[in-house]
Length: 411
Image 1: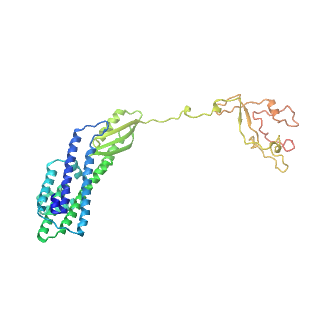
Image 2: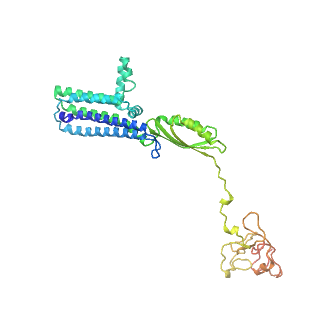
Image 3: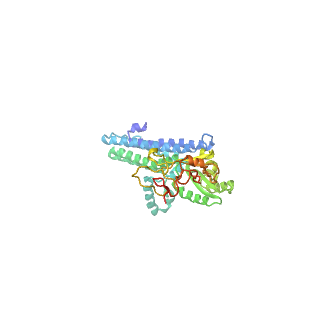
């Protein structure tokens, strides 16, 4: 109501800080509620993330209000209305008192942690440089201004100072445009102060590892990997559960003769100094040895028949082959080369008799074939007697020296 009566957008921007203070009180109530709640089966890690969500929502809403002020201020530069200063100064001091009372009288744990852990805003950095210069002249003020001021108290004081300057310039020179300039300044200070806190709380919601504890975590993991019985530490994941609460999980591979409970106690003792909510998975080293039962065996190896046939390439047409030499019968064909007991590509499949079993498990059997089987294949050699045959188990393999095309033995 006072902002409407004065028609001051700078006072409206400062009032948005009062609304932010109301949200900070709600966040403080949520923090007390979280302290009383216990973890449940649905929320096994507790309710601490409600605090983070409340801080993130409050800071984002404050930034949205600052963007709205910037948009309204851009419109006012085109047509500047008249500002009434009757309640401008009174509203400034009332808002300043309420803001300071809210921030200093109540211990707001979530916002206190975020203001210390988040990076400094540009307003804090400029004030810190000014404070060093002042403390160089008056050393007694170092306890108040250094190392850095509370960002909420700083923005409340800076906004009130901007409104006081606006009131004096309007009263003296009727310079109404300074109200719009003060509103832009308050909006920029609000955005610059809330943005680092939004980033910090957003990273907590995304379950990221805080940068300032990465070095300590690496050191602890190196110590764990050197414990007696530990072979490997892997699948480690650490994240911020809430403000000041770190959670994590890790897999530890140990020796087969190591004591699981002893290793678990040592690992937990090392990591618990930094990680309050920890899950450790211990598993022993196990070598996988292949067994014979796991190797598939073909059915034709297990169920052996009396004769086993080794497949050969298909034979050519019978009319083109000589039954003695198994070579083409064309007169233009060259004489066959020496075979050296190696079947040629035109030799029919070799038949093996299953009378003896070789110990190698390959399914090949050997033995002497009867004369009848030799003669049935047409391997009688002219001039050597019809009853004489090859005394070998390989019935269809050519002789060592072969025969010529006329059926005479070659030298």
